[in-house]
Length: 470
Image 1 (spheres, rainbow, N blue to C red):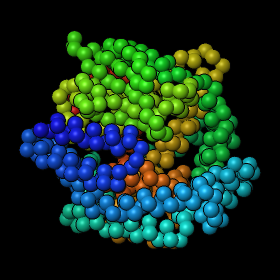
Image 2: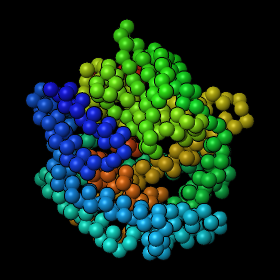
Image 3: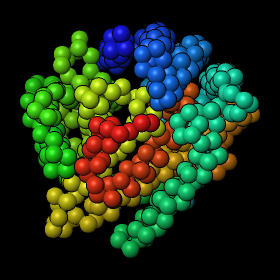
Image 4: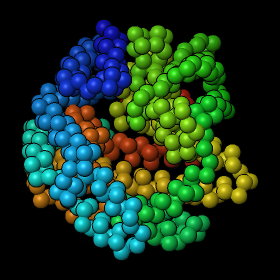
């Protein structure tokens, strides 16, 4: 019964993503399947880990059910804003992303960049009506979430305890400690790259300008999807002792894995979208496949930069992880509540290091490594900030109003958090709210694990889930 529910969830999610048209009823229908899965986990598979996952699924159902109208209203508002920007209507009253990008492109002087940052970064840049409605949506969702908390704790405390076994104050301290270590890493890079760039990277206002210089160095090399898949095969064989054969089709690849004399298949498939994602496979989509990674068509049609290669390796980490855990008969998410980003981060870092190592001896190998490290650090600092904001928003007595702004400088764009669907979905969409700390803290663990260098242990413990109980 459990496998049929999971299969239906995968098929539903696949149709929602691939179909192009965004079905407004998807959230509710998917939530009902999550609730059915929670019942099955509690009935057939009762361990501490699956019990916690079942509790989260039940909460997700209740949250999606309650927030459906608010999320639909939000999507309609964003569609209206995007339509206004595309039609170039009243840009002075509606300084949307297209307008901001246009202004950024004209700026070269540091003073002008800082002035624009200070004028726009801390506030919700929206027309009055849309701003008022979005603020209302958010506060209704937050009011509901506060009712979920137990024993008078905040929703942030509730979720941090579910995932980490710690309260939100402790998780915030872990995040701040990681943030400090990232800042120290960035400062140490002054020995290898121009001090001016490092100084600019430490300024949230100037970091985008500094990244232009970084990109000009990173984009010196490009890779085809076929070349990247060969890297995947080599890493799996060299690091994990895992044999893979690759079969090419017009718009997808089959990765045939051999374990203990048995074969199973993973799929890498084209999607006509700017997004990438990885999920369990449904028998109705690809029979006998354990998992599928959907990649943007840019990977199939063009050579891509090492930044795109990072994204590719990240998704392959998920693909191997989901496929292997499923192969060993375990339920992916119930086993990986606070670790399901580790394998993606592990494979991303191993893959990038492999590409840099392949340039050894060339004039750019050291520079590429250092510039890429700069890029990673600023990216990671944004993840930590987003996690901290996620916790703050879901803490006690937080209320958003139309004049609210960031009280400090940050790499994370405040306006983007509430006006870009992917960020809004993470914060309020009934799935990852008050749990975003999984991303940076898993990344920190991945770095530490790779530096220890025991790849057999990495493969067995994390990718296969052997001996992993939570």
